Image (cartoon, rainbow, N blue to C red; front, side, top):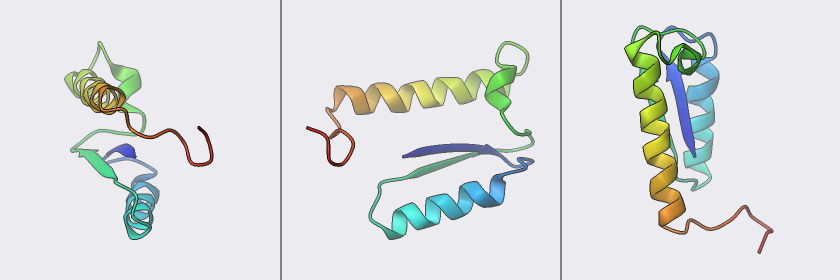
Length: 77
C-alpha cells in the first residue's frame, strides 16, 4: 500500500492512522509525506515541483510492484 500526504494535508492524521493500522495487520505500507504541501498536491503537477515529484514517486512504486508480480487483491485469482 502506498499512501501520499502533505504535511499541511487536511487528512494527514487519517493517512498516518491508516498506515499504522495497515502495518499492524502485516500489510506492507509506505507513507510518503511531502513537507509544506496541501491536500491533493498531485493535482498541481505542472505547477508545483512537489506535485511533479509526488506523481513520479507513485509511478515508480507502481512500476516496481507491477514488474515484481505483486499478488492480486485477496480472494482473486
